[in-house]
Length: 252
Ligand code: DC
Image (cartoon, rainbow, N blue to C red):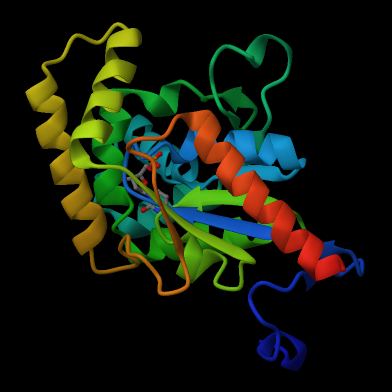
């Protein structure tokens, strides 16, 4: 940390290497809290870069599955990640098919391949591997450097962007999140019982919150937004309004 960073309050804008001031929004929260949709829309409204860090863990899991590598083989998974060219961009042209973001792995579009139930099950153990996290956190910090970003995940507010201008913990009740997840699966044509979805969600919550390395948690300076009784538009409006006020205070 350099001396100018040390004395900077977290709600002040950062100077990029180009001398441009940046504003960074870090969003953490449990599964199906609406982080992806909300972050993407907030980023669009503000003209910021949207970064889905979960997609990066999903790519790591996909690579392990495709190469027949055990989900516990940390060094081999780290090697696979470092040998791979990874790109994330806003969907363009025919890619606008409902996805939030386009993910390219060595030029191959894996945006949907990383969202299957098989990858969803495999990603949780992969995301507990400390060296995998180390490599991905570094990549995430490189992507965000000098940019206005909305970055979402589980450890963004305290590990990836600990100096973010705005930290948000986005959540909703377990029942509401399970209903949303169930609806998502049904619309994708996957027939599953609500109870099964609910129990899987509780298991994933527990794994995310209790893992040793960088578990999901609420940091003291986070703004906790409970979306249980709010529409997506209401949540987006709330966040955008807050950012506009913070930025106007910074520049005035
Ligand atoms: O948000 P998601 O469901 O796409 O995340 C996929 C997995 O990656 C999930 O098990 C949580 C994990 N994850 C993480 O540990 N840290 C992040 N910054 C983002 C996701």
